[in-house]
Length: 116
Image (tube, rainbow, N blue to C red):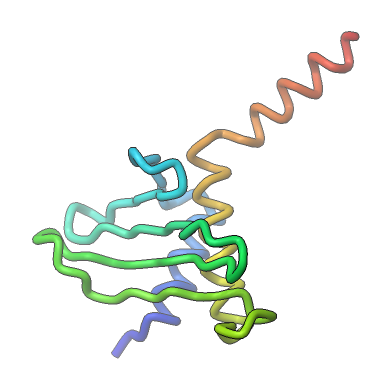
């Protein structure tokens, strides 16, 4: 039986390999990806700077949450296990980077600055 840790690891690997396409939502800190129309993945920065929480969930096509995890910076009183925190935070960072096309934008800015 797959556990959330297994799912997160596979989602992270698919994102790193460019096989999972994330999309922006109306909330600038939330990104979603679909799995063959059967599941929706969501990763979110919950915005509290004191605990640096991140959230991951997987829902079925009916909108039912199948699994979810909220993680907190390990160095805070509500801290999560470092590996759990790193997985979800890394997934959020990758989803954001891919969705906002940050690598291309940084490259474009560097080229513009080189011309100055």
